[in-house]
Structure formats: C-alpha cells, structure tokens
Length: 105
Image 1 (cartoon, rainbow, N blue to C red):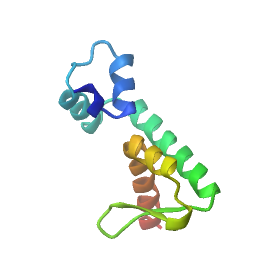
Image 2: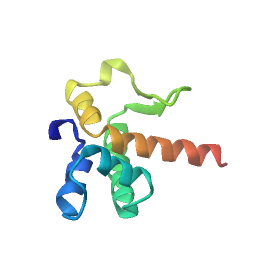
Image 3: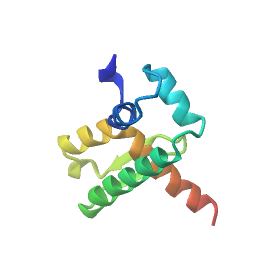
Image 4: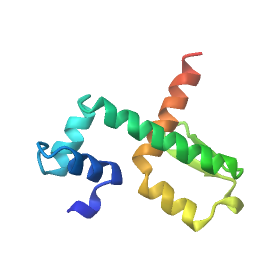
C-alpha cells in the first residue's frame, strides 16, 4: 500500500518512471547503493530537520542500540513527533552519519 511508503520513497517512484512499482523493489534499489543522489537528498533533508529541531533546543541522538532519541521531553511538541515519524528515514540517515563521523575521530 502506497501509504506505507516514506515521502522519499514516493518521490523516488514519481521521479524515476522506469523504477519497478513495488515498495520492496524501490527499497532494495536504494539499499543496494542505487540512486546515490537519492541518498544524498535524504541525508540533506535529515540534516535540515535536525538543525531545525536542535535550533529549538531539542537533543537528538542514537541510543546504544541505534534507536533515535529526542528530548528533553517537555520541549517535544506533537508536531515534532509527527515530523520525525514522517521523515524517519531521513532523520535516521543524518543521525547515523553523525554517529559514523564521531566514531571516525
């Protein structure tokens, strides 16, 4: 069902008419390293979201198990959670990139 697709996956489908039309095939192509520009766009979108939320005083990071954490709880608004859910893939890409950069130091 297309409602299960992330906004980025829907964009990829709309942009590339030669792409197979199933979610599994789109995700596989992205995961296999195809669409490097799509991954870059996803990372850029995630960084933008992180900057916006951090600019409002929120802390976003990955926990020890690689799950995203946001806080402090009293500053998190319902619309922040909606944004994080809707753009989960982009936010995770940005957080993972940050984590890799920190590990590489």
